[in-house]
Image (cartoon, rainbow, N blue to C red; front, side):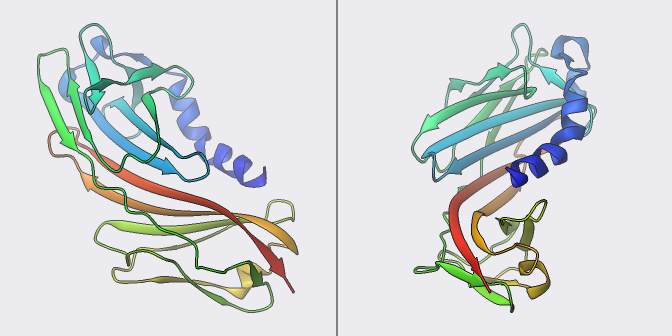
Length: 226
């Protein structure tokens, strides 16, 4: 729950922006920023596909596509989610990539092929981590590639103690978990979120641009010991 609260706090600025949503027919179509994401979550065995449209840029007002405008993923229409201010669809199982096609109100079509989701797994046999010393976390899966980030959130038993470890160093195959952060986690079972993110510029966009991300989120637990 603590980590969920941290995510919620991190999303507050976006939620405030989303309160000022408007329809895409009220804005210059060339000023619409596109953002696309495909996310596979292991414990759900679901792939979440999401697209955000904003007026003026990444921090602009969230838009709901209106009238004849629409966005599709692998030819499936993404429906608007009022709460998230995004167009979304969920798929059972692992969908590793796909094509987003956005049609605006000026009759323009923007086709963008997502990066491929690359799996990442916890080290075999990892059941505990000592909070008393640093730890080298060697994941199972490809090394960090171009435009990739590997991150590990660990949420321990103490209040407000979730810690983040991350690397963008190409060729890296591990994360060094510092003792100063591990000591904050408290003894007992901790929840872990291991995420590989691949980012890509748009193949086709407006003058305001945008980007795409493919994410693999592996959820697990580990015991924090003395």
